[in-house]
Picture 1 (cartoon, rainbow, N blue to C red):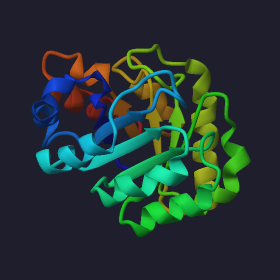
Picture 2 (picture 1 turned 60 degrees about the horizontal axis):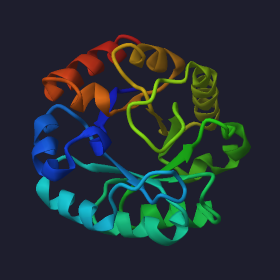
Picture 3 (picture 1 turned 30 degrees about the vertical axis):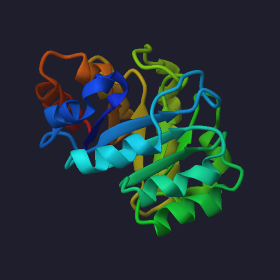
Picture 4 (picture 1 turned 180 degrees about the vertical axis):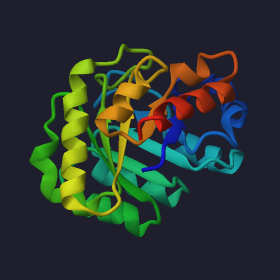
Length: 220
């Protein structure tokens, strides 16, 4: 497994997103875009027009995490807009297989996300439809929340299921990932790390990305 770091613009300056993306270009693997609709989660962030603009403004591939109602309707549009990865939530999708396949058909990697209270093993049959499994390590909706250590066994379970299934499925963690927690996530089996405040709250975001990668690489 190779370590991948995906800084989240949720903690960036929304008035200067192109500049914020440039701060981690060349060192990060992805730019994580948290799309929230104030229905599925109690927060409102960005949508498709911002993603369309970001695709033109950065060389980093966009990792779009849809925390929205009715992702079956909207997910394909993000892939068609140029997002390289589009993740939908198990709790929100009503036709997950069809939607995941449409994301892939549109040219993006298909991700499947799980809130803290959702058991990954209940969706084991869908592993063949995804390229990335995302374990939320906070309740989704807001950046800057403390990491939930009780999610570590869930990360281990997800890695176990991925090994059992075979293939190359990435295991992403999102929420409270920092210098203090990334090694625990890596040890549990994660290989893709979303970091918001740990990157954009740092004086030098590029350096923060390098340091997080080095920490995780010791265990992955």
